[in-house]
Image (cartoon, rainbow, N blue to C red; front, top):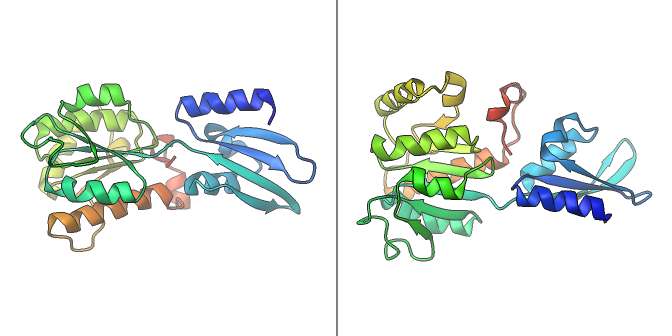
Length: 240
């Protein structure tokens, strides 16, 4: 790899942005495509698929062969609320490969004993997220049922364009949540990105079942190929 390409790739890694090193297998020439430049690239469809999967692969386009070396940051999953659903979700999400963090200012809930092998931060979301700096490779789920705790994190998640935002609560609770977010300045397009009621509709009842539905919804948001109508949405709605 040329030194200038390596430096550019390292810059993207440091900034937690995706990139693809494209190698023409006929002559060995290489170029780096940053994720923000993918839509305008001649290999846009192949590059988008590669970034979604996070897997490097050979592709053939119009009779030419390329190797796509995919570089994407580790996907983080921040959960606001150290509740029973979080206890079931944390180990499953770790097995699925997510970098898990539990955030809750209530020290009676946010303890290492209740969440072994998972990072737990007993702080208010604005303090914890101010250091963690969520981004487009971050999923966030809100489980506290307490607007004082959830709302500040929701505002940060929306502003950071997290690829998944989900919140627990009934449709009435969510309607009240949306009203508060509108008062905070978010528009309906932005608010449509909040999955609520949270989780896939699989009839989940018990905390562990709800955790399964949430993890499935997060994976769907991460890996699903967007529909044409979804691609037409503003950039804030695009998946990483």
